[in-house]
Image (tube, rainbow, N blue to C red; front, top):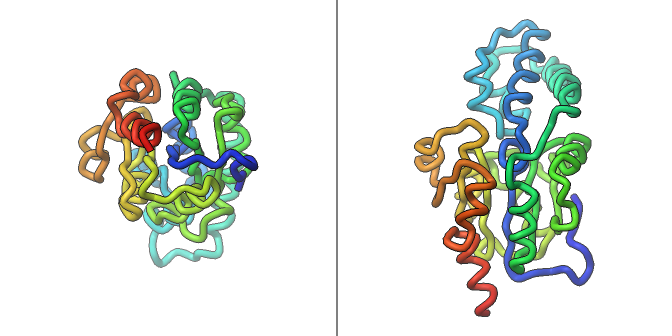
Length: 236
């Protein structure tokens, strides 16, 4: 976990998922899982994989593979996914408006935390793609959570890192698993469709607002849940 800098504590925070929310990586993960499954002898449709991206790798295996499989091979499948995904690192790019969105949130007086369950090395690469480290107060990786999304452990770790209560936070994510995790802490969740999940699915999962991506959220920031949170902080 990357903690907030000394003296940098703020009263409220915006937590961001990373894969599919700030970086255009969901379909790379889909292909990486598909290849890892094939190497292990499993034929899993890409559509099913895509719908599961956003959960932790352990949950993806339990959801998509037979329950009676030899789980001794799970670690090999996860390592294969990591290896294939790493081949896509040079192609990773921030989604339009991602850097500016983090900057605006930070400059608006809110702590910015990346609530990601990515592996630590993957997270480093993703942060490089975003290029906004000066506006990020804290970041989590898979090492910071006992259970992965849709469990809320990653969000709890991010809140602890910036010293903010769940009641003073907003979460932004692209998958239903993000929305479910936020809901377990009663954190308002903004859904982005740039990860390939429809607005209807995100809304049904409990998202309070839906935008196409970081740029659309940025353009509507004052009227969004983030804008209202920032206004509350200014008035306090």
